[in-house]
Image (cartoon, rainbow, N blue to C red; front, side):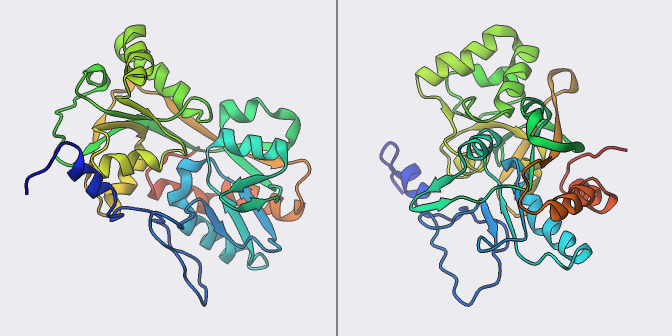
Length: 297
């Protein structure tokens, strides 16, 4: 098939073959998910009269099905659970402002538990009655199946022909860690090339939501490489999507430290305590490890 410049890529981007939701939707008499229009992949469960509300840093979305099912088995008194997996910076703004609007939907629910990277949690100490570490992660590069740009490491991202999908520093905590990895791998010049020069010429795309965008841009041929957490490459491969990992050496890598915080003003304090105990316990640790995270000993 003859392709005019950009038209085939645009056509592929409209077929929605790889679109979320990638998790299993809850049971309902009516399912009205429309790929590319109404799929709401980062809102989980029961928004009406929930017994527990948890705000998760978005890059844990793949764990939700297994984690929430296990929590309900352990604590069967909690049947109505509502979870958001949006960027931690957006969730922090939602906590501060008291609401979030997506499309025509306004959500006023307050979280019982908030999870994010340690750096974000440390910035909000007055909001929590307790905080605990429960998982770790590392960075990787996600590329298209077959790695057509022959990317071997972070330094290759400064090449003019390489299109990058990069978490937005405005609300993604991982962006600072990725930039630290750029400096480790290629000095300040690599960070400047990716985050300034290539942002200005649009060959670095800054995400508008969070990590969900990067694999979709790789899968639809809109980007060639994306720095992401390792677990995201592993998850995309596990659901049969054609992506590959380019490993980042330990000396150039960084480690994410995931922390959970019980909110002082939790609407459901007993449920919050139960969830804090669960997410830092052995059953949740085993679930996180099954998705490629590491956990405290």
